[in-house]
Amino acid sequence: MVVDDDNDTLQSIRVIFEHLGYEVFTANDGIACIEQLEDGFEGIVLMDIMMPRMDGWDTIKEIVNRGLEKNVEILVMTAKGTLNHEKMKGLEIYIKDYIAKPFDIDGLVKSIEQLT
Image (tube, rainbow, N blue to C red; front, top):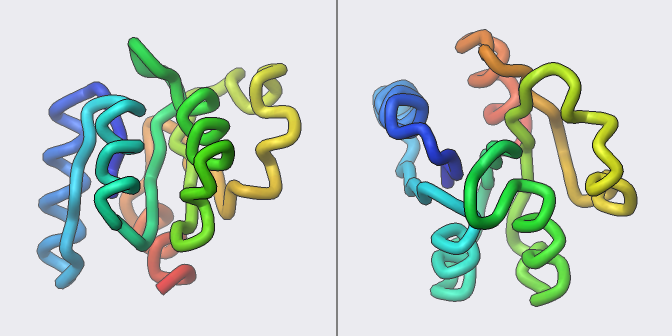
């Protein structure tokens, strides 16, 4: 699942991974991500940090609070400067990798393939 408020990013990542044979789900914010997890989504969650309504850190915290982290692998997409945010403290153990934006497609694919 790709979670990002930028539609171009959602569609770009969808095209890349569907071309590689992956089934791709998208969510345009943290609330939609939580809903899909509650509906039974299991797999990799590629989470943007900077989003309106519920940012990535709050979304990860809510995933953990609701016990939804058990069947997902979370990767964070983040711009420079957001990795040392105070909101991430305590969440590091739930994050499998950090992908810098703008991301390198080959690096993104490699990170996902290592988790499958």
